Structures are given as structure tokens and as C-alpha cells.
Image 1 (cartoon, rainbow, N blue to C red):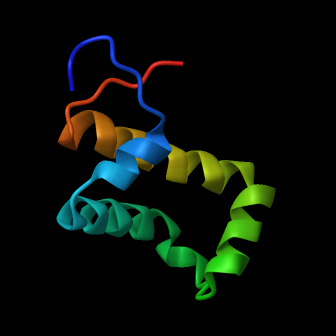
Image 2 (image 1 turned 90 degrees about the vertical axis):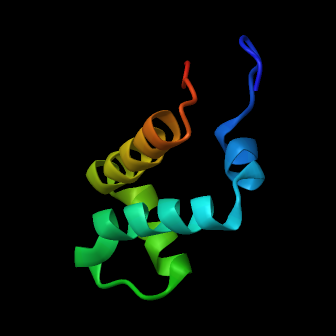
Image 3 (image 1 turned 180 degrees about the horizontal axis):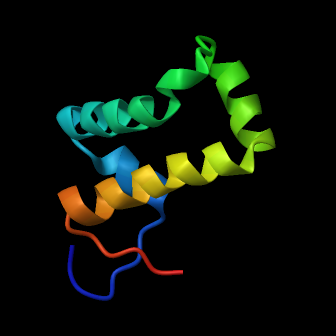
Amino acid sequence: MKKDTFKPISEVINDMSHDQREELAASVKNVTAGLRIEDAALLLQFLLNNQTTREAVLREVFEYIQKDMKLEIVD
């Protein structure tokens, strides 16, 4: 990606290879492993209502994108 090109994180994730998405999923699973929530809908509801865990998951996603994909995240 050329410098000064903006892409939303959702698009970056969509453009990832299958292996990259699997690595990201494994990273996020490590953050949520202790929750013992098997249903994705329940996990989403939990994340929406639990700021600490939501921030941990977002931090993991941002870290993966910055370190492993060498992309910059700006706000």
C-alpha cells in the first residue's frame, strides 16, 4: 500500500490472506480464551458490554496489523 493511503480496518482484514486471518483469529482467541463463550453472538454481546475485554481485543487487532502487517493505524 502506498504512503498516505487510508483503508478502514475492516477493509484491511477483508484483504488479508487466509493465513493472516487465521493468525489474527488465533491472537484474538488468546485474549478471549478465558471467557468460555462458545457462541459468537454471545461473545459479541459480551464485548459490547465489557469495555475492558473490548479494549483488549481491539488492542490485539491493532497490534497484529501494526507489527505483523507493518501498517500504520491513525485516528
